[in-house]
Length: 367
Ligand SMILES: NC(=O)c1ccc[n+]([C@@H]2O[C@H](COP(=O)([O-])OP(=O)(O)OC[C@H]3O[C@@H](n4cnc5c(N)ncnc54)[C@H](O)[C@@H]3O)[C@@H](O)[C@H]2O)c1
Image 1: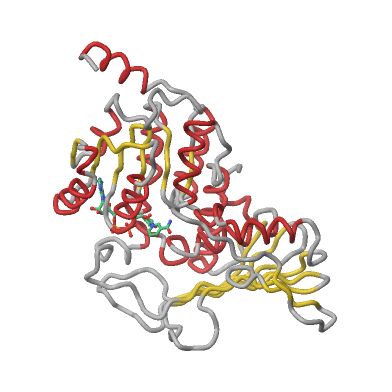
Image 2 (image 1 turned 90 degrees about the horizontal axis):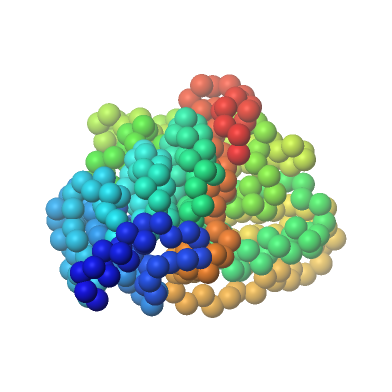
């Protein structure tokens, strides 16, 4: 390609709409190539219709490692994320930085005309999420939030069957996300994880997946929540820590369904209860949603599998992102889904922090 054609095609690339990538391989830039970002990079490199043109991380060692992993695409590297977003040759941007940075970066990327894959949670405050929703709805670009459970076929098939009446009316959901230990204090995310303003704590940073699946199966977001939480085991670890190590929550939905949700980081690994569960109770019986999808009839009959395990080679959520960009497919986790998931976790955090029942509408965000 001569220089003139190159300039024309790169300028056009910045203006492509959904389903109209200017090239066969979507020019992709990645901001944040730490733990998750390096996984995403690998998954992007495995897509035949993607090429990595730019990488950004403010830690030079991570940037170097990512550049080596992406060497076949010879990407430009930079430590300033705004420079990546300013590049005309970048059509799609991945954001895998700490949570408090997501909304600002995603908004800037969308305003610059990029398609966006934004890791969860898509924001850490109602104000960030309100602004992100507004901007996303004004663009005709793809937005996929990193709520990748939405692309898991077995869970999705089970939820469709539940919504078609397989367990009768949904009455109650009991879910949890437990871990056996705190995240490593000197680990790759130790410099932001224990600061509530940066991560939103375990509930927002991790349980946002599980809460999203609960909303998905119930078919709506909660209308209010109550709960308690605190730090019982890891007080002062690390110094300045202000994220909780346990929370016990109840969410109420407009259709009368209640969700009880617990999060903790001292659930022994060998304790014979899955550390992550979503049990959905219906008028005909209940389903364990995350692993077996076993359906247990209320009449005492033998359990049956609601949704058989499906072999899913590669990363279905990343694949879905490029299908959105190149073929105009529907986003599996659009901005409304990402926003609703994050707000559900923020509501759960707020009830514990403020020590009172809080209504969804008091978050002040229309989803
Ligand atoms: N979808 C999933 O299953 C999943 C799994 C793990 C993590 N995540 C999400 O991915 C995000 C990152 O988590 P992680 O575990 O990779 O953390 P991490 O700390 O390993 O990586 C974050 C990276 O962002 C970089 N960074 C920070 N500020 C930056 C800035 N201003 N400009 C450029 N780079 C910057 C850091 O240097 C680091 O390399 C979080 O939001 C997390 O919730 C999602």
